[in-house]
Length: 422
Image (cartoon, rainbow, N blue to C red; front, side, top):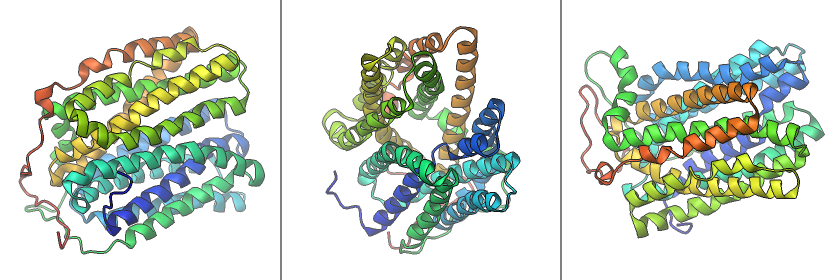
């Protein structure tokens, strides 16, 4: 898989993805950190920054998705990168002039979140036209491996940079990564035809829900969608609970806490590299069913973490097992989702998926926090670990994951997007 060439144009797209992923890794948690260190924000304000900004960004992305659907995807991706660069750059500029405020951080967080959803949705649609259908799994696996390597490397380097040069440093790195990403996308050659639509040029109210409508009416996608909401929501809901458990109740030093989350990310490289081989050997349905179930069985292990080296090893082992299975499962899921979505509905479908995932994570994280406050973080982690064991029941049956046909379902008023020369 590593030696298979997908062409120079995909190489530029991959480079754009990589540079922004590593920039985001370096800037991970930068805005909340700035709120704490520079603005003396309260815990409630920091929580609001982590939740309200992305939530508002998701709401902005709802009407934005149909607009992106019927535009050329490459210019949209470049524009979203430039928007994110400009938004992030306002932070160091305002800081330099002594004008930085909490409201500005909220606005930046919302703008970046909305632009990210639009960029990723447009990128998925563009990938479908740029890469041959039988190469989609390889392409998605490469994106997945890049994601996990950036998570493993970025936050530790970002923490070191903050210690040496201050909290605004990583915001600058993140901002310029979007600019470099835009340059990489601009380097992709080939003319992209603009998708055509008949009738009114305005976005109709019904088009706002087309992504969700497709997800919920397609049997295979509906099962995978509901399963993913539950699994990703519960896994992410345990992260802040685990931080409290390890740092406050069990007395883990910060460097061990960082190691417990950085080291398992190596599993992301392992799983993503195995994805194509596993599917070729066992088939897509068995891979989705088996690996989808294996993602869910490990989380309960975090409820048994104890102080000391044994506890640290337990966290690393559990996180490693979860990440290996997630990184193997995600490219297969992403490929199936693209193959079973019409080209004139890809953006709205991917945007709907992202918005729903963000909402599920926010809701389950809030419920987990309330449960932890009423009982304890360990109890909340235990409940999440038990609930996730039911998630394999939502995975699709064999007949629901039948191979997609080569024909694209037609949507009235739209023509499938093409790339010149293909």
